Length: 358
Image (cartoon, rainbow, N blue to C red; front, side, top):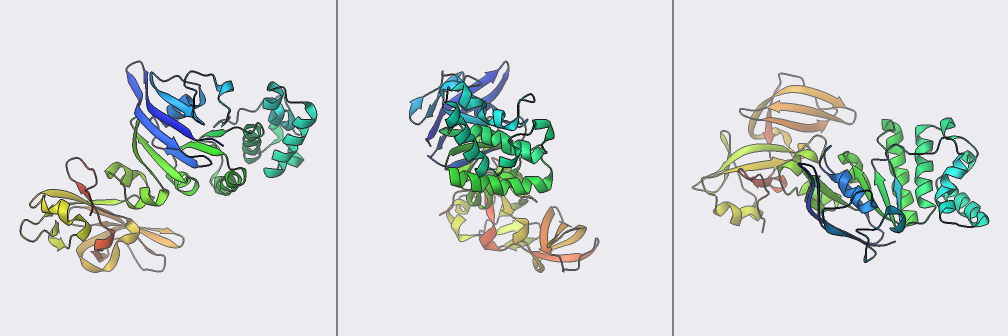
């Protein structure tokens, strides 16, 4: 295990800036997920950490050692690729043992360590098979085993579950979390799947346009997004945002034709914004149906098993609302909505950044 430090990384490809002065600290044994939409630069950050790309400026430190200019083989890392990258002409045992052979590990030690990691990943009965004889989930286990068998200080994963079907991804996600806890390796994991990020990471680093937007525990990222992008990107369905004006007389939030009490935590920030526009954010599960001053009409009702997702159109907004599956709801039905004060997140209407709280 080792801590990882990325210091002011900057990387350009021609006229495209892929990474912009990004800094990140990963503690020993921590599982950190780099999350963002396609093309945001998260994979480039991982490749810089792996030594597959060299930053234009900035530093990479692993275990306190500056490895910025070192090749991958001298960084003491293991990498799991999206494509698995197994050697088709080698049996599973030889695929897993490949890194040990390149390091000159004696054959008896190779066998002991391969069998040890195969037991951990439950692939002992696959060691004599060829990669072509394996399912997608089995190939992924072999790829992880190959990375772990060399006992790297840091394990890097580049969207390793993206080629698996939904049910297998769900299963392997739980297995991967268990495995990381047992091995205790420092792990940096790249994905565009926010559900994957929230379920796996000790902390999540949200990246946009090459910049680190927010870095923290999954619950903090979900409940306290620093801007509209994070609130919209994290959560399925995403956070609702409504246009509001801070009443110049009483400081309440005027949304459409109703007034809502403002959260006390934002009292100082709103005192400076009397008469100005703000954004009100609220998660779909926090909107209360059948009570409250906001009126709307159900546009779509989507059964989702234990829940039902409603799309409700009000005077000037369209909100996503989750209710219990037993709640009757059909398109065209009129409903009233309440936005509980304790669940509101307020943002600056111009910058779309979260307002400071007391």
